[in-house]
Length: 349
Image (spheres, one colour):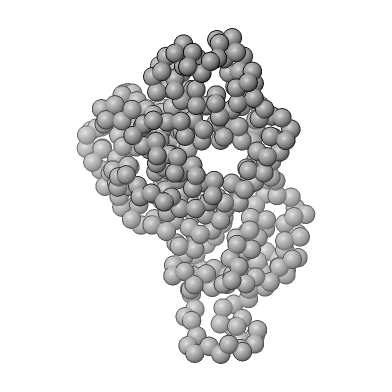
């Protein structure tokens, strides 16, 4: 159980929780909005002018939308979203990617931002344009969150390419990272180590040396690139009932797109599973045993959480009201089954 529990913890940390204390998004403070930057909803959105003349000059356009400075959010919202990162972020925003003061200043000059008050005015005006284009502030926040996810993914892919070029992803004892992950997945799914090694044509000594080196590389990797590659390869080798969902989530994340598959259950059902684990743990029970009582193996749960977690990332800001309501209903059901227990949950997505 030690190895299995370690694998469970690894995946739930990687995708948003732990087996000791399953986490949920806070209904009052959605992480999707926090991750989207320090955006605040504009106080009002000007109605679209009727019968706009295509030849209106810049002054007329500005009077209708506010000061956009050097931005054109209606046709290039990504430039605006990226500028928010450079102007408002400080320090590391992705593995090995740090925003410097000089980059902030360069971005402000590029788009004609004079000072912080001017930036806030410009940002509000840009949001107004996007709200009018997409229909709601929540949808704009979701698009901004998705942009940031994509940027982070691209940066991680660049880091992985650098590590590969430097030999940090080279096979150990002839065992590559993907193969090592798949072999560990087989063990987690009940294949005996000796049978797995025999089937792979790997002797115990090679396996031990390869495992030690890959584990060491993973622990030294402060960018978590090796862990991310390992996690995707581990799940791509899964044979659980939610394996295809996990594979689709990993593929969608790599391409920064929405999943092509619909969730296998409602969000309320998923919240209920998470809350059941949290309340069981708080009441002195074992979350893994709680999963078993609900008919889930640990492998199934890791695969399901990978898909549902990514689905929430891609939809949370746009559907925050519905999600908050379904979370409240789910917690009410679970708390009724655990009288006297109070479970704290933290942001997971």
